[in-house]
Each structure stands twice: as structure tokens, then as C-alpha cells.
Image (cartoon, rainbow, N blue to C red; front, side, top):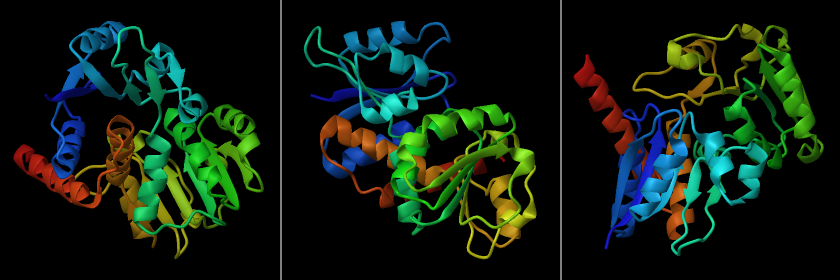
Amino acid sequence: MSQLFAVIGNPIEHSRSPLIHQQFARQMGIDLVYEKLWAPIDGFEAAVREFMERGGAGMNVTVPFKLEAFDLADEHSPRAKRALAANTLVFPQEAGGPIRADNTDGIGLVNDLAFHGVEITGRRLLILGAGGATRGVLEPLLERTPSALTIANRNPERAYGLVEEFADVAGDCLLSGCPLAAIEATPFDLIINATPASLARQLPPLPDEIIGPETTAYDMAYSAEPTVFMEWAASRGASPHDGLGMLVEQAAESFLLWHGRRPDTAPVRLALREAIARTEQRQD
């Protein structure tokens, strides 16, 4: 009998999660059904409850419902508690059991960086943005002991708030915040764009001096073509990567939570990249 899973969001048509999890399941010989589930902005909990009544075993959660998913759950992993948001729900298999929440975004990012051979330990990091995307990845990055990590945001108060909140896990890392317009004009080893600017083909105001010959520029957004942030960084000598691998790696962590087995992400990365390219070609 097939197990039932879904990804929930608004909008949801663009989601690649069904393709990813179907590839994982085929690789592992697991029989599952994985749906896209649209929910109205004020109807998240009702949609989740209805899905559970249909026998749903687990759910991925995307924007704008990650905070509501955290609030709905009865039990929270340490990762979800740190992020104050959940992108993965595990549903009870017996009536009255707890809904469990986790957040796999951070481990998805660090696993993707490792896949690309990007070193974090002892390196200088810069994160652009201080929203939920940054909150979800801060602790896993800090756990890998960079020498310094700067959070830059248009509203610096949000960056300062994250610095204060995560100071307890910073260790010897120099954790700091600043306005986007006041980023130190010296090269960073790793720059992570956690803003939504690339989705609108926009680029945050950045000094060219933050790029050095050994800089890796990572955009959490992804598309068939390089994002504007990746193009800017590559034109100045950085090594660019997009967030497609992070999407696959966070999905692999969700798969592990649901099935107790971790799939091989490499062939799924390739299949997803090819599927996105085909979609872009059909739209041209």
C-alpha cells in the first residue's frame, strides 16, 4: 500500500518536491504518492487536518506556512526550535499521537556546500538578508566554526537581533551584523544570498571588494540560468552556485525522517536540473 505525502504552499504549482521525492522513492524501492497541496492563506490548519484524515504520513511545508507549521506541531526538533519555523511535518500513525515538526533547510545548505567542496571551518562568511531563510541556516553554519560570520540586511536591527539570539552557539566565531550599505569592503570566503532579490532579477547593493579570487558566491534561489547575483559574482572572479542542490538536500533530510533511509542525491540533482531546463525551453 502506498504511503501518502505532500508539499503544501501558496502558490504551489512551481514546486519540484514531487519530482524529487518520487526519484528518491524509486531509488529506494519505496511505494509512495506525493501530492502538491494548495491551501488558502487562512486555511493552512484545515488543509493539514484534512490531509491527515486521508492517511497522510508526512508533509513538506513551503511559503508562506512555515511559521504556522511550527505552531501547529505538538513536538519540535531542536532545529525547528532554533528556526521558529518548520518545513517538515511527521504525522502520527495512531489516533491522538503528536504531530512532529522539523526544519531541514540548514542541513540542506551545509550538505550542498559540502557537495561542492566549499569549506566553512575557519572561513569568513557573509549572509545577505536577515529573514526566515537566514534564521533557518544560521545554527548549522555556526556549528561548523567559521572564523567570522556577518549578517547584512537593509534593516540592520533585524541583523542585530539574530546576532544576539544566536550568540550562544557562535563559540569563537566573530558573529556580527550590519546594514547592507555598510558591508566591510574586503573579500569574504563565502557569500550567501538569502534575500528574495534574485527572484525579481534584482541585486542588493554590494561593493565589488567583497569578492576575492577564492570567494564562493551562493544564491539560495535557483533557475535554469544563473541568477543575477551569480552573474555579478562570477564576473568579478567568484565561484557561483545556486540553491537547487540545497532544495534536493533538504528534501533528502525530510525523506530520512519519514523513511529512516537517506537517498543518494547526486542523480536527483541531475534529473531536477534537466527537468527545469526542459520547462524553461517550453516557456520560451
